[in-house]
Image (cartoon, rainbow, N blue to C red; front, side):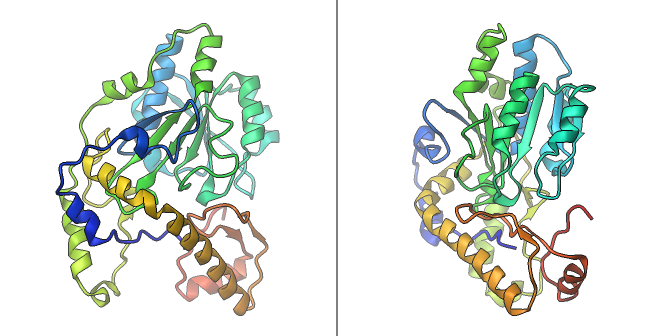
Length: 330
């Protein structure tokens, strides 16, 4: 497990008391590329809901077919299930990449209108092939980069819409960043549809932001309480991708915007720490005489969790030692 959420220093909490106005363009510049539009929301699920509504208004019809990987967090689909969208779960291979041979056959029976590609645990997925597939199928290409801290390599380059989830990478109560790329509006124009600003769709969903008072109370209490008191508890703050005690509503809270703005300067250190943690896990496994069948990370990626392939007996051995493992594709 690499996904640690370091406590913000006290100076950031004291700065929350100031009446500072956050420039959202400056706040999102680490995630935007030239020509991109950034929308701040409380959770990725609201971004997916807005994408479907946007598609409906652009094409003047309901029930778009949304292709979703068959290994996908249900909490991200909560708002999507409230729309008219028809969900279609496409297969992945053992490397968490789309099974393109199967997808080509399935598209003959159920053509995608919106295709979601997820970068699992920070690993780069197959963006090049996905772009080609979506071009042939005339589908909106959405990158789910909720496990990605900031864009790296090809992430955020080839898609039309990119989704980031800072609340899963930083110590903030809520937060998602939806990047609308020029290719999205170009796609709609080529289809003969008028340009509908994406921020208008988001505003139509709701302007309310979450209450974060409980999160602040819990976080401050944790900072003033000795660590050993928490040593016997499962101290994860995120349950199903949502912070405990935060009732999610569409817009990102002011507290999250301020904390994220404060934390921007710390991103290089966070990246360094996560990459160091990956090396530590590899070293520990090596010292235990455990060989990894395959690591899915390249040297430039920023791990969200340590994703690798191990044989079944090794997994059972590590589970017995109470290692924080999550098993996929059993």
